Length: 93
Image 1 (cartoon, rainbow, N blue to C red):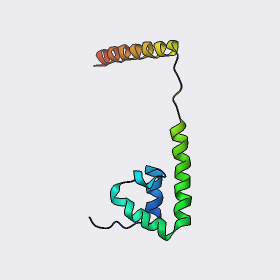
Image 2 (spheres, rainbow, N blue to C red):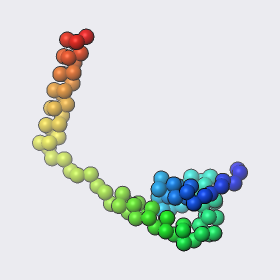
Image 3 (tube, rainbow, N blue to C red):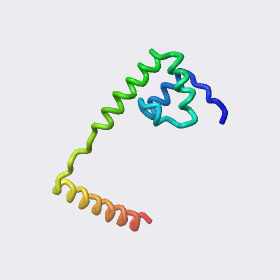
Image 4 (tube, rainbow, N blue to C red):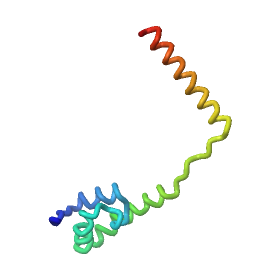
């Protein structure tokens, strides 16, 4: 496998896309990322720390629980919308 070139911009883009753990980055990019991190440790630490903060926020997020009444209203509303669309399609043709 040929060696991948790693720029600061690419390193930041990978951190934004894949998170603060280089082990989760595409295999083909890891060695070059580790080399850049060794050459510019302060830069790499700062980029990875920002990505790790976002990882933590995303890991902590949980969807809100939907009550039975809201769920039933949503389903009923969707059914009405489908019937309305079918009627309009039939009339307009």
